[in-house]
Length: 386
Image (cartoon, rainbow, N blue to C red; front, side):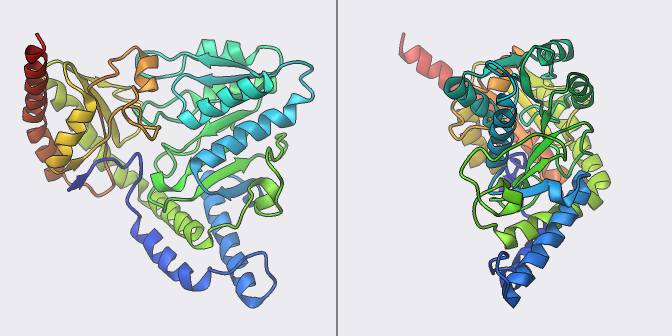
């Protein structure tokens, strides 16, 4: 099998695997305890926090480890809005782009229904880039409590104008949540954020580790029953071995970023050029230049995306389709819908580090006949119903 779904979960980096195995022996104890094993676990946790903070460009005491990227986003959104709500003197207001991860949009929807928070969903252009004037205008609205903009899109790879949006937010005194889940370990962290979230499994760390960073001076409070762990931001016992593996993976991918991403960008460029040439009635989505190095999404007319994924899986290629950030991928992609693009028959290819040119060329060889086969099946089914 050729695994081409790294945007969902990058295979565990060898450095992360080594750290995980070692930590199972050294970091298993409760770091809140004062005995020798607990002090050892706390030392390892502190070292991991310092390493990750150095990669993100924040202070270690601004950083907390969560159980997932989704939990990090929910804590960031709910905690920031609730901390500022009392001073709003009326229903608060939240701004997010239409192509945010579902965790952001679900948190915004939860606030709208539970607290009366007004939500503005700013549009994007046909490449999936947030409309900067529209976003900036929404941030200027009275009682705006929080703005949310990802660093790069997780489905089509387009980079977002995060630095410009940060400047607009700072001018209005509005905190900005930047979700770097798609770009962490691959691109530098954008400047100007107030809250930062990420997920370790997307950079080659283990599942079950997310990151929440809250800049000093940003108003935030624990939105759920408080706990004395992780700077009183995240409840529950931290998974120290998994955190150590996540830190080791992030440090290693940071060192390898230049050469690895250059190779991936060349392979994605090949896919972007070959799919429209060899597959009739297909279109490639997202910005061709200002994008993540490893993601490419395309759509094929007259075909179901899930059927394509199934046939490609049988041919030995693991890809994704539909909305890439929901469990039920049969749902149409809200990202492609916001772009005004075809929402059916789409395939997201996200290449892991170390993938070979031979694997990509083989994928490009098998794709056209598979699309033709699925289209023939659809035509036959439609004809039988006439």
